[in-house]
Amino acid sequence: SQTIHQWPATLVQPVGSPLSLECTVEGTSNPNLYWYRQAAGRGLQLLFYSVGIGQISSEVPQNLSASRPQDRQFILSSKKLLLSDSGFYLCAWSVAQANTGELFFGEGSRLTVL
Amino acid sequence: GNSVTQMEGPVTLSEEAFLTINCTYTATGYPSLFWYVQYPGEGLQLLLKATKADDKGSNKGFEATYRKETTSFHLEKGSVQVSDSAVYFCALRGNTNAGKSTFGDGTTLTVKP
Image (cartoon, rainbow over all chains, first blue to last red; front, side, top):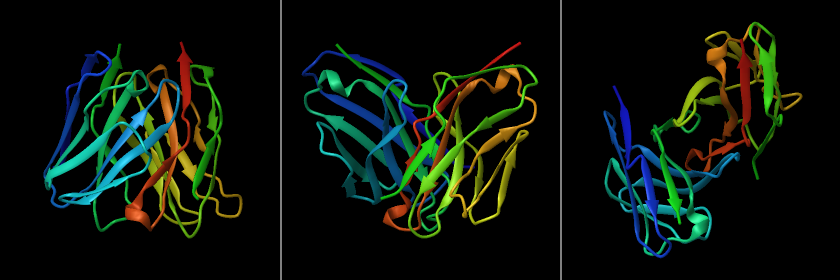
């Protein structure tokens, strides 16, 4: 069966520090991968998606970047965090050839920037 | 572009009450529609889905029918339980743009014993 894991689960970082959130998927090949951010009491905002290794599409201009160094690994990064980067970050995957299929989410990573 | 509008919360109900959370959408083509649920401190998980008009998705006593004529996908449950307390998200996924999903803002449901 397929599984998705992301880490760390909780992170408290000072303003200006770097960030690295990692996400891995097991049990499937060539998934579509996504990073979402959920602000408190709000819906989900798509940050990045990837349809293959090294292929990253950004949805909104921001202080963050994403990379996909391996087929089932997706990394969210920042060189210098801002207060506004605080939030709940969710990694998700979907079957590449089933564009009407559902998303499978990781457990989430809560980032607090102080 | 695509958009999803769902009933604002929070919603507070007593156990065994009837639940309706409204969801309407705007999309081109023929999207698939979903309801996801998020329990406190967790990621989202699929509750139910429908991939074409007039389909009914159902799971754990929840139901939603894909109504193309009213562009709606309302979530219903006949008798809620305390364990149903969570945030519910309506979403759609089109068949273009790498299948990107569009989410509503979520509706927080609290069920009291």
